[in-house]
Length: 239
Ligand SMILES: *[C@@H]1O[C@H](CO)[C@@H](O)[C@H](O)[C@H]1NC(C)=O
Ligand SMILES: *[C@@H]1O[C@H](CO)[C@@H](O)[C@H](O)[C@H]1NC(C)=O
Ligand SMILES: *[C@@H]1O[C@H](CO)[C@@H](O)[C@H](O)[C@H]1NC(C)=O
Ligand SMILES: *[C@@H]1O[C@H](CO)[C@@H](O)[C@H](O)[C@H]1NC(C)=O
Image 1: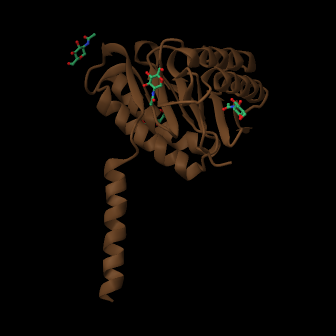
Image 2: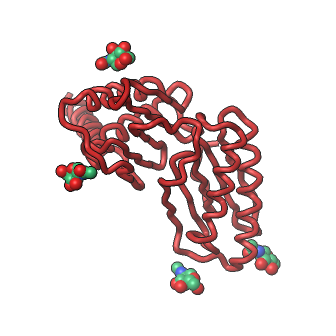
Image 3: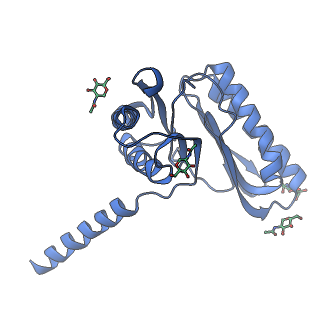
């Protein structure tokens, strides 16, 4: 009896801890420095849109919506990594929708990235356009033993994945490839408001960006508001 209670208590505190901490964001940008006022229609619409995306996104891994009119209209989207279950997607979008308002309080536009999802909103219609303004990159500081050869392998794999992703409706592709004893794992994904051609163009830009962040590095990613790419020498997606 007492041990059952102990298990229950520690389970509860684990869940509380998880709820309190949430997932850790990789990066955020308060993309529009203009502020909305408290209790304004914009704030109401943003909260409404956040709930809408929270409900809408998990079933397919992508949600897109706009609420309000004229200067109070808010546009937003959420994208989960293509391999996630709907419950994992749900948890990430919930964290993202709350955290973006803590990090960019009252900003009329913002974007936040996690390992497992991305959440973006703005007071202007950005649907269907490649977001060239919001981006960041991350890398593993370790160098490949033959950087030039490794770069070529990465580039070849990512180019192949970009082609594969842009020819599926999900605009998502993962792959792996043997490089001697080490294996290379890659992933590319676009937001699904983009056409296939725009997705491919966005991914091409991201692959080009690998040269400045991740030259010869054993892991790297370039993430933007419309697409993101990642490669590692260990598996990082569930396939
Ligand atoms: C928005 O509000 C913040 C915090 O009050 C302030 O620092 C910033 O200057 C404001 N931005 C604009 C564009 O007014
Ligand atoms: C959110 O906006 C939609 C569409 O305008 C509306 O139908 C709905 O009642 C709103 N929900 C809340 C919670 O305000
Ligand atoms: C990787 O190579 C760069 C450039 O040669 C060097 O500055 C850096 O220290 C290396 N990183 C590691 C983790 O060895
Ligand atoms: C793979 O192994 C060969 C022969 O040992 C070596 O020349 C080559 O540089 C290795 N490739 C990579 C990417 O490390």
